[in-house]
Length: 132
Image (tube, rainbow, N blue to C red; front, side):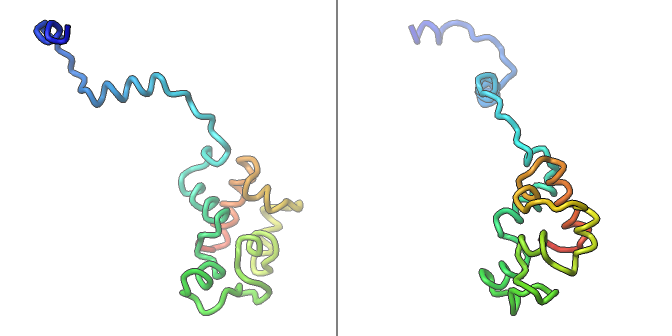
């Protein structure tokens, strides 16, 4: 049967085999629901990801893992500069923090909350001048 099929005239199809495979796979792929994180812009996603994982440019990571800075301490001198300190306690950014979050908000909500909460967090980081 294969020989008979090979002898038949083949239809002229302008779609390549690779492209056809992609089309067929996409037709059978179930759509993945988008979580809040994926509704952010790419730069916002990068900021949230770095804050969540601790792989960022804050002194605690730069000192502990990379030994790039002499101390893990924040410039405020109160604690090590990590995600929790920057988002909750750092006195250098107290005014901005109160402006963005007039009411107390949990660290978990700032990093894993609804889209609006995540956008406030990225806005805070951007406006604070911190590089994460």
